[in-house]
Length: 192
Image (cartoon, rainbow, N blue to C red; front, side, top):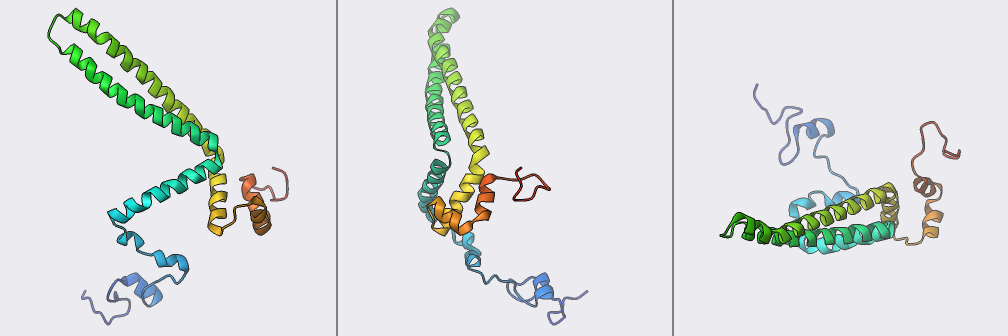
């Protein structure tokens, strides 16, 4: 079957697909404001991404602090201590291997390596405890974070920093979102 550009349903020139031509008569474009960012990821380079990373991290930390400051502190301290423990553990493993691979009798090498071995074991326990604390804080924060971060981002996007202004503007919808999901079949006004 030959491909004829004049046939109905044929692909239009450029970036218009055959389905767009058939269904919409041409290229399907968005005329809404958020559609202006269409293809922005194609223009994103490594330099612009690296330049925007500190601002994005700052926004994420700010939202996490507003949502649950205690969980943020627990996760931050836990991950920092865990990173330091891993770094010191790598140095201790190096010292352990130096002692084990040194010339001499095996009993003397094992005795010389024992302090480094104990340090590696203690650091492994510390790293595991920090990881557990961080995971627990993340899990506790996840129970409240999704709702509160969603509300905080909505407020920030709309430019309202006060709960009174947001409640007055959003009314019943915002209060329903703050209360959380409801079981099926329960009307919005009834207690869950």
